[in-house]
Image (tube, rainbow, N blue to C red):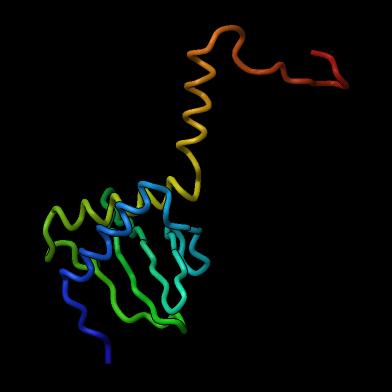
Length: 132
């Protein structure tokens, strides 16, 4: 029998994960079971945030699992039943997990720093045995 987890509990978990993720305090990793998904392992549970695409729209699903990685609940599969703010919360959590795993923010910061600094931008590329 599936667990019946109150919607408010999912919201609290997602909100706390989002706040801590923005401070780089959640060790997100690529999900090893699902595409377009990130996960964080805890001592007795796993949390996944997944994106499901259908045409031009996306749904974001928060999945809670026990220590054996058996799913005990998910929030967001029926987005039309939830509020827009719940959708935005799950989407923002997914985007923060993506930022942490891909480190795109660090890459962008490096590029911006190079572009606003003095002097030449970038290093020459060496081709054909050291010739430019």
